[in-house]
Length: 273
Length: 282
Image 1 (cartoon, rainbow over the protein chains, first blue to last red):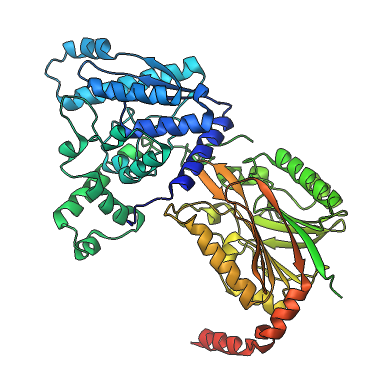
Image 2 (cartoon, rainbow over the protein chains, first blue to last red; image 1 turned 180 degrees about the horizontal axis):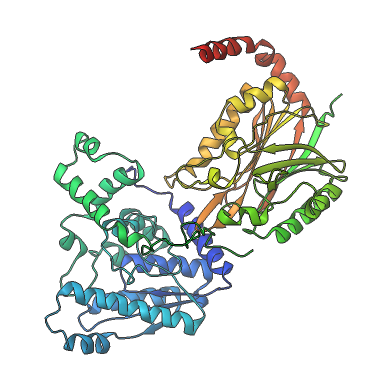
């Protein structure tokens, strides 16, 4: 037993109702998901299919020429297993056309550009299909800022945003996600051999233990060090959380009027009076 | 002389946020049906007429006690005793998170939420004024206490009601779901423990009506229940389902529980009074 263990049937139940209710509130019954073949987007797709019915879910596969063919095969396995609709839209032409002008652009710029390209496609398909974009970002990556602002984080509703990566893997097992998807090393799949854990320099198991204590249990870094966690690791994680706070908030607005949006003008998002 | 049994129904519904007319319609329909099925007391959750995460909608959905919507519910209370939650606009234009007990076409009791949680995900004191009055009131089934959600987390509340006389504690709630560890909603376990303790210690029946549904990504867990001081939990509604729970409360349970263990008879409120007085002089 770990403190990160979750009650999978209960969580699945809550997330499915969340998708049904929150889409329905805005008059939608259909969802569109960017499906990479990784565990996060697969879990979102499984939840969407269970909540909305396979016929109401469209997965959009958006490979780049450098993406691994194995990812595409995994994504197609999900599409077939669930019997959902899908679209495959290569993003290579527009990405390459853009970077022809900036051949020296580093990997980070290229990665962010691809994430944002995929976002614009999802939002366009959202309009074409009369479907809302269902998010695929988990709590671990959102807290670490290991995401692209206005890219992979962009969505209308996100069922995964309050689940750590290790919790999400448990949920994946419960939902019947194919084993090879759960067990393969998580990767943004931007260049051959890239893995999240290789880039971050720690494992999700380890960082989730730290994040859970800092965020959910509100422990202070020094209390965790006393508990035996390596000080440097805890400090680094907490720094990543603080430094990426801007990614988790709306842009700052300079207050001028008596009633500024979201500061004094505070209506629920589910506003339907 | 109090009536010996109470046929009660807890309506575990998911109000539509901000949609008072639609919610009122569901109240009238559910209460009408309950009355036709022999139910004597029907209970709806906290803010059942408005939904919970209202924020700036609070003044827009507020009802005055002399409003037309209220009159419809009063009218229906000629057929059935009715408990529900709403945003109340007072004569002084204060806004309260209130619960009404209607019967025989009259407002028999009004409770304004005493404890407004303003921590974590909660922001109630920003939008509501806290009530200042705590009083049990007569019903055909003996004296009752009516409280709202966070009020239950302060044991002085049922204690005071118990001293005033309380055969039935009615708690209405909009309790959000959180805590995903195995074993059911964490928050549900806390309520189970707390409500069970109140029934046992204050030797009263407890009716707890919690809402379900989802607002702005936050789910409400339901799990409405009835507890007897003699037999513990006598009925529990499932978590998350929109449903209703019918229970029969037996007055004989109070008698047997209080005879077996005379906690109420033995209670010595003067100890508390003296301790509080001493503290107030320090």
